[in-house]
Image (cartoon, rainbow, N blue to C red):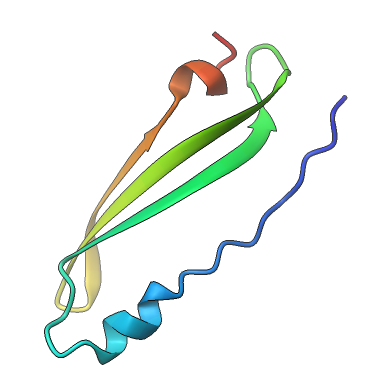
Length: 74
């Protein structure tokens, strides 16, 4: 079985979000993961995108995009 590495993701944009004169309404985060496919147990690497929408200082919508074929071992 392959070893998995866990990566701490730092969201430095929050510092800018709190100090912005006009609060940000949309934040896009690009990242990648190394994990095991659920169905096959094989290791894979894949990029992903998270898109957050905020209103009144709270996240009101989250959308995530990823390579589902890689995640499920297709």
